[in-house]
Amino acid sequence: MPLTVLLAAGAANNDRYGPHIATALAGAGIAATLTDQAAPETVDYIVYAPSSPLQDFTPYRNAKAVLNLWAGVERITGNPTLTQPLCRMVDPGLTEGMVEWVVGHTMRHHIGIDRYTVAPDRTWNHDCPPLARDRKVAMLGIGALGETCARALKALNFHVEGWSRGPKSLPGLVTHQGQDGLKAALSGADFVVTLLPKTPDTENTINAETIGWMKRGAVILNPGRGALIDDEALLAALDSGQIGHATLDVFRVEPLPQDHPFWAHPRVTVTPHIAADTRPDTSAEVVAENIRRGEAGEPLLHLVDRVRGY
Image (tube, rainbow, N blue to C red; front, side, top):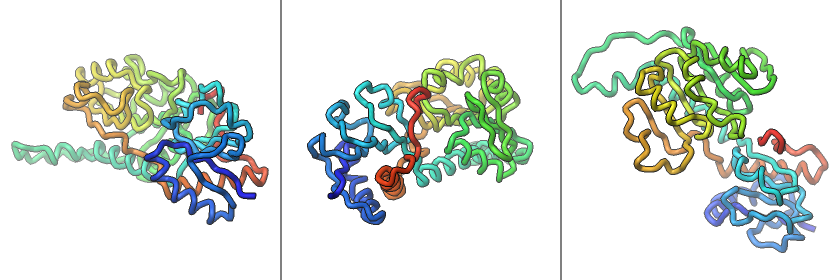
């Protein structure tokens, strides 16, 4: 008997992702009916986005797992009706996009591209930038995305140091943990990349105190979560020159309000949450693999720890 897979990601996402998921399920040899309408007691798996109208999971008592289409799960982990296993999305296509954004903007600031593309007075500025080996990058968050970005920057010869809240050792990378480790990672950093999840413990990781630990003129790149940064502290640091530039892809309110000071600040670059998006084709393969694993009795990929929140 075919499985029933409920696609509960909202109408637009259902249309965008549905055909790819159906193709991936068929390619994996999984007999399944993919639908956006089903009697709750018949549903075996739920493919989900937090913006979905589905917010009460109580009727889906037979569902074996909820498979989130996004990497972020902070909008669903606190749902008291969710008792099914929850898996977040770790999408190879999303990871590639994140690496390209982080490396691209790090190189932009490292080489000083803005100095040469914005020169209305036609000044011949012959100052050469340092080499990558003379620049320190602090990678805050060394999960799947952070580690991959860290290794890509290290391959370009940057001095990369990673930080995580709990103990984590990654071969070939310098890593720090805890509050003391955060200060060590940020001290002397030329570039700070924030790729932490949003949890009560990570909110405002970048604040007036931690900004003070960075090298004067450091650049902050935030493609992680808007709440990781204290906006007022960042604006003050930009105005004082403690932070030389901030390139921001995520914000506390999205779309970023038209009157937000980030838009007009000369030392801020705003990108509209494009650093890493779930790709329909590659994410569909992850969904199909997790359903295959569930049916084979194998451990699910990217299972969320409800206590940690990711």
